[in-house]
Image (tube, rainbow, N blue to C red):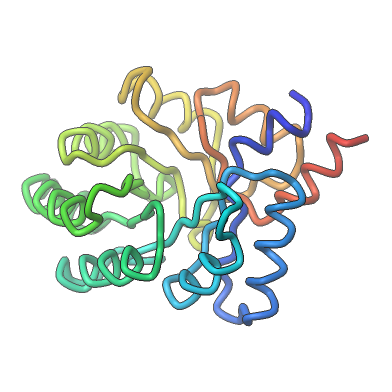
Length: 219
């Protein structure tokens, strides 16, 4: 794939706790220059990213329950509502991993349904944190995400033991079918890994290395 084709799948990501206004503005400027699908920022930066990207057609993605997923449903919903109010186009939310691991699918589904409602029609991506799950739980999480009305499943936060693998992306794609979104994130740092994730079934890539990948493909 060439740089333009890859760029259309990239959510250029800045979720570091030490990010500043200047960093967010640089992220948005580089996203414009490279033609990325979107930027992904923490909730505190949604409004500034929206201002920087007005009229560009580049999406502003924010996160909820990030990076642990272990806070209350009400807290996650509040984050969603605030992000939407500030101009977010999409929401990436970490599901309650502990509840999933203990088999409390009812809790996980109910929470995701509430988050989808809080997002007010904006696409919700459900972060599974696949490195913490066996394949059976990954499959369960994917099915719950589909049932909840979310639009994507996402591999990882990038803040746990490891990130996306092509095997996990392929498993998620098989589980959700061809028409549901799959986002690979965590550890995608070069053109080879980006292309491999897309070939495995991802249709979005979350990466803080978007510019490096774009430049590599520019040759």
